[in-house]
Length: 399
Image (cartoon, rainbow, N blue to C red; front, side):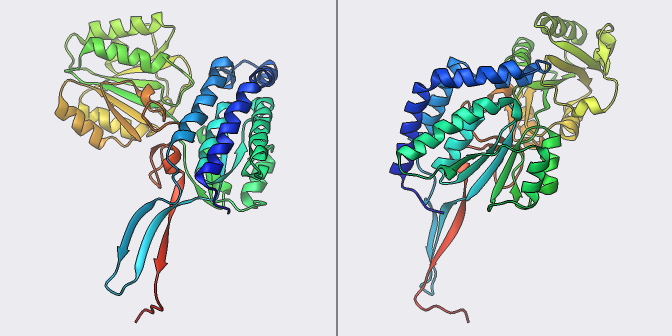
């Protein structure tokens, strides 16, 4: 694969920002076709699909931020010269060709492509059929930006395939694939893992938990819970499960207060444990599977827990390993929780909604990885490279 100069890559991104600004109305019109065709039975999916002026402005800003970041390719990680005189340099290197499979969100067509391209990777974009018109228009913009700078359009390709065609492509790709990122639910992830012939980096489900310790600041806890649940229900960083320590002072009154606040925000409640004894009129969790479920809806589980240890065990058993939070005023309790919880992001007294590349200072992200190899958390520009060893000798042979 051709290694492009930083200047060439930035020139493409400069062109792209101008093109998107000029094509703003056409992009929104294309998106409106998708919205008109969408059967609005899934509010979270619909919210992800919408492209308005603010979304287009956000796309431009995402490109600008990546354009201004340091080029991640060719950076020296280490440089050593052995006693033998052999010089060994380890440098960052592009993956090659990345396939991302995602649902609904047309802004991923911008963010995934800008990150992959700046990191000198080709990218294949397999968006959901519900965003087809939007994605076609956005990739047309990418191709125009590439052409303006003398580059082939195959740097960024929109894959328009159904499930069967995608399966065939994964099993027998028509071109070399180096990395696949399935960005969606467990069914999509399992499907890709079953058929892929190259590395798969998992962008897992949310199903995020929050534990309220017995010494927690209650006012602070309520504010964090409401924000994490209601700020954006379609986000993978939204809150789904709350575990309240049954030893917290005035347990019954606090549970009722939290329930009232959430219901005033139109959140449906499910209960378990001693919370069910307090909120007798609310539905109880009917089956264990609910504990594994990512809701992507105005729905939340309120449950009791006997201790921090019990809460940590429950979270590590059922969560999506995305984001977990403890509300406590005890720094040692928070430290233990954050060390022992198996999640990509762990929080102390803060909303899980901050698990986001932009909010965490990473910038635009390809996905939130819940994998442990080769990176966990927001996949930003610096994470879209691998490494390569350059070994320089002078007729060296191993004896």
